[in-house]
Structure formats: C-alpha cells, structure tokens
Amino acid sequence: MIFSLLKDEYMSCPQAECEWEEISKQFEERWQLPNCVGAGDGKHIRIKCPRNSGSRYFNYTGYFSIVLMAFVGPKYEFLFVDAGCQGSVSDGGVFRSTELWRALKENSLYLPPAKPLPNTDPLFEENVDVNIEHYFVCDDDAFPLGLNLMKPYSKSQLSEEKRIYNYRLSRARRVSENAFGILAARFRVLYTMMCLDPRKARYVVLACCTLHNMLLSKSSQSYCPAGCMDYEDENGQVILGSWRKDVCINTGNFVPLPKCKEWHPKNADDMRDILCGYVNGPGAVPWQWKVLIA
Image (cartoon, rainbow, N blue to C red; front, top):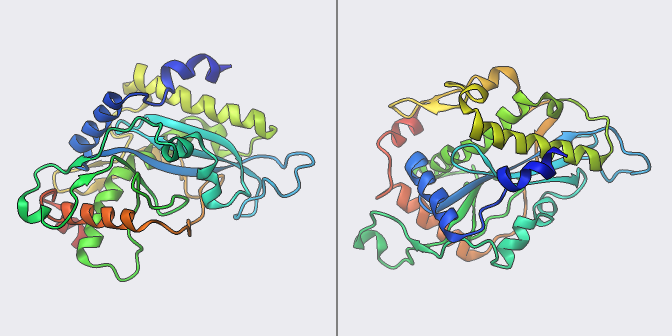
C-alpha cells in the first residue's frame, strides 16, 4: 500500500521540540505569526452509502461521507492527517477522535515550552503573562478554542483590533486552504463520489495526502509551479492561485465541517487577547490596516 510504504518518510508528525521549533520559525518568517506550529482544517469526502451502515456516514449536508482532518505546515505540507471518521459524527467529536487531540490532552506532542512573543516591550508586557504557548491556527469550524488551538473571534460586532487579528490569523490559515485545494486539484478522486467501503476510501485519502507530501519534497516545481498557490503582493493584496481555476473546495464533494459550538476555557480567551494586542502593536505588518479598509 502507498500509505504504508511512504508514511514514515513523508507523513511523519514531528516528534521532537527542535522539529516544532523549526516549523514555528518558518511560520514567523513567512506569515509573521510567532509560536504558530500549523494550520488545521477538516473536510467531508463523499462516499457511496456503505452497506448496512444506517445513517452513521450521513452528514449534515445530506450525503454520505468520511472526514479528512489535517494540520498543515508553512510550506503547504501535511504534518498530521486523520481520515475515516463517519460523516455523521458531531463537529467536536471528529477532532476529539484524532490521535493529535489525545496527544495535546496528554501533553505528549513534544511541543516546545511557552515563550515570550518577539519584539515586545515593557509597555506591552505590563500586567499580562507574555509566555505564549505554541499553537495551531484553526478555522472557526470544527475546532474548539484552546491554549494550543487559536481561532478567529466571532464575526459579530468586531472592533478594528479584532478584525486585524482575524485577518492575521487568516493569512497563516491560508496554508491549509491551499494544501486542500492543491490536493483536490491534483487527485480528482477526492472530488468525486468514491464507490468504496469506508475502510478502503480511508486508505485512498491517506495515500493522496502522502503523495502530496512526497511530490512537494521531490518535484515541487512541476507539482506546484509558480502561481499555483495564493500569494501576496508588496501591498499585502492576495493574488489567488491557479489551483482555484481547477477545483472549488467549498462546493460539491469536498466541503467544510460545520461550525463548532463548544465552550472554551477562559485562559484561552486571554491568550487570544494577548495575540490580538501583539498583532496590533509590536507584531504589526505595514499593510494590514490598508487591507482591512479594502
């Protein structure tokens, strides 16, 4: 099997603090978001109704599916993937069924210890704990807010500062959107109904993700040529990648998970507020207010 043969070399989740530190460094250099170690997203993948399965695979959009949950690195590579969860499982239940969630809860993911945000000064640090945990950025769908999971503020009645924070998070989250887009554009089996039982469909999905990583590593120029992915010009304007002309991942058979309604801890709210202050202060990028107005 493709996944079994290649997973150790091309689909191995980081296993040491130094590996996560390197990922965090690349996120800060590319997306100006310190302490970030990945971007999370999840999608439903259509399958044929499994025999004698009842409604277990019947999702909220009205068809049968399995779920692909993934966390993506700064170079659009998959750091962690989980596939095969029944489409009927609740939004929070999908993520809680993954090994990554268990590792976060058990503190066995080997993330680096919390550290201060860069370029902070005494005025910014006053009365706040500036040791920020390393975290994944996530969409407001499917993921609960936590110290290791940062997500946007609710879109109702946002202050300008919170809108800036949401924009800065969306820049880093774009790596997951583009990774899923490239995956669906290159491996079109993900954009059609799979006439396979869920177990076999799961291995097809895992094989596609593993081949994506291998091709990024071995043949990036032909697999993802210049202009294939979204990029920003010198004014911060997003230029859409060519993959969007090939496939739209927000319709059809490759759709997002529903909005998560889970409660989140107060200290995660505090950490999000600290990050919000950072991206509006010491960590601001020159064009962010222009992009917000536009």
